[in-house]
Amino acid sequence: MINKVRDFVVENNLIQNNDKVLVALSGGPDSVCLLSILYKLKDYFNIEIGAAHVNHMLRGDEAVKDEEYAKSICYKLGVKFFSKRVDINKISKDMGISHELAGREERYRFFEDISKANGYNKIAIAHNANDQAETIIMNMMRGSGIEGLCGIRSKRDGGIIRPILCLSRNEIEEYCNYYDLNPRIDSTNLENIYRRNKVRLDIIPYMKDNFNKDIIETLNRMANLLQIDNDFIEKECNNSYKKYCKESKKNLVIAKDAFFIEKAILTRVIKKSFVEFSGKHTNFEMKHIYEVISLANNSTNKKINLPHGIIAENVYGDIYLKYKEENKSEENEIILNKENINNKEVQYGEYNISFTVISNKNNIEFSNNVLIKYFDYDKIKEKLIIRKRKNGDKMTPLGMKGSKKIKDIFMDLKIPVEKRDTVPILCFDNEVAWIVEHKVSDRFKITKETKNIIKITFARKG
Image 1: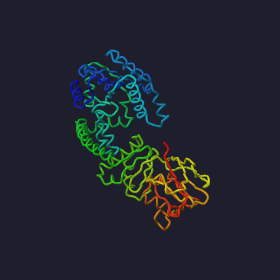
Image 2 (image 1 turned 45 degrees about the horizontal axis):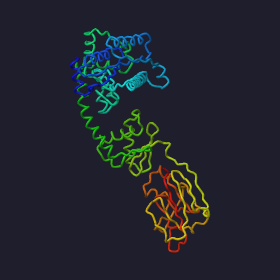
Image 3 (image 1 turned 90 degrees about the horizontal axis):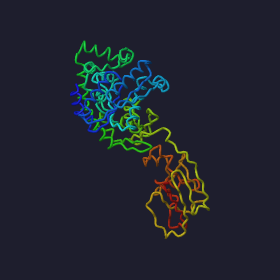
Image 4 (image 1 turned 135 degrees about the vertical axis):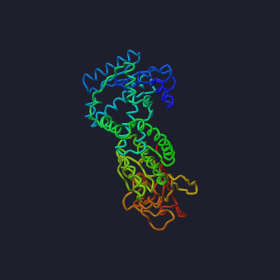
């Protein structure tokens, strides 16, 4: 079995020369077997080993004896030992989650803390072939796709490795008996109270007796085959994500063209978008993915709610992911007197704005900068106003005769709805003169009759 683990580690590239490996040591058969085998292989791989134990404080004296046993076996081997006691019952109640989930999160947090503080670059977890089979069955009952049917990976991000995933529970027990290791037995593993225990104690034995005595090996073989296929699909997904998705601090945009690719890739691109934007892996379900696909086929400006306070919006076929609180701009309007405007500077939103009155239009070098515009100063009666759009706003765009609603101009320019309130509107008296960066009014253009000109510059801060 030692050679079997060695070959599995090499085949899956789990350990490299000079690695520092922290073993998650509960004191049970799986983790004790893992520690023992890695200890016997430490010279072969030229690695340093440590062990970490978390006492969940759920089983009273039994849990204390588990901790003492884990400490003693490390002492005998000369392996560094780290331990921590955590009141999982309290954490579970405070966070409103199960003991299993609370325990898992606390364990991994402790392992990561110890690794960072002591230079361990790998964390070895004692999942075995039976754990793999149980996980696959549980995922199947939840209606999982191919990714869930891949089960447990031999390694994952963060330096997590599973060197004995190739061993069955029977092999582990035989190993512990042969070397007289006397591991601790968690009595709750023998009780039919948890979902996983029911799969372990009821479903798998039934499948063995009635369908396939080698069901553990069969499910592990299936997982290995599916992992190969899944890796290929994931590679295609990552390529499509880079091609069709654009991230920023405020939103993530899935381009409309993404919704024409194969659905097997598209669904993963959308799921990846959820995770990349939110930084969270939980609570996103297939129904949310299909809602986004349906949204892409809907009319523009339609929105749906997603987990973690995210909304998805159709903006001319592109799908924008953003947080609800980022939709509105609350800028107040600025009113300036025409007579005092020359060389004036003000701030509005993300802009610094300056005004210059010019008497000789022949000395002007007009700019192509969309943030710099020139207007007929004498057509302004009393005041200049800077504000966001209002219902009913209209203007006559340069070169046109009739007026047009600002709302329709925004739609023609395909400005996303959530950005429309952030676009400054410059008014002369009560008329819109400039939709900043986009359109100017024909009403205030410079002509042959113009005597005085006002130059207005919007410059973004920073």
